[in-house]
Image (cartoon, rainbow, N blue to C red; front, side, top):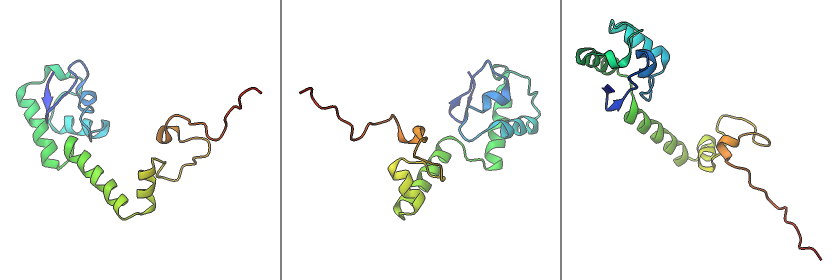
Length: 126
């Protein structure tokens, strides 16, 4: 498995699809990187030479793309800033509710978690 920026990418996938395992690189960006590096996009990641890997890393840093730890850190600091200034989005992040205006009465199970029954208790048989 080749390593790019400290992350092992899947060796058996085609190059643009295996580059997507890097956090911050999607399909479009991966395809443009492969094209700019002049590498065959049908090539498997296991067939990459050390020179081609270095070329991809150089292109990612040259374009200034934030990937992996840097990007995760930036997103976390943005969320912490929103929470610190107590804006609406920050409050929603704190409470674990949807941030972008979605309804919460029936849906939002991804953010809210498993259903918790509230206020319904069965009385003991008398």
